[in-house]
Length: 88
Image (tube, rainbow, N blue to C red; front, side, top):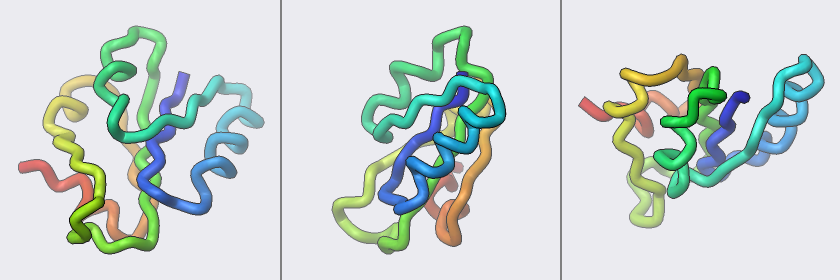
């Protein structure tokens, strides 16, 4: 299973669909529930899909990816994903 985490992108559903078309089960989730999924052994990877909003906006979901780095392969898609995922 591949987890697609939606940070407000207009392409989240399309990316999830394309992963399924490649023969892999994919589930689209919100950042608030990510920690519940990461520990599941069936999860093979995580795709973080960002949106056009500023990463500095007050309502931007908070994500501390330090716990992700130890678990699964991660792919970030969006111009701002580097800033969104910098958890050092």
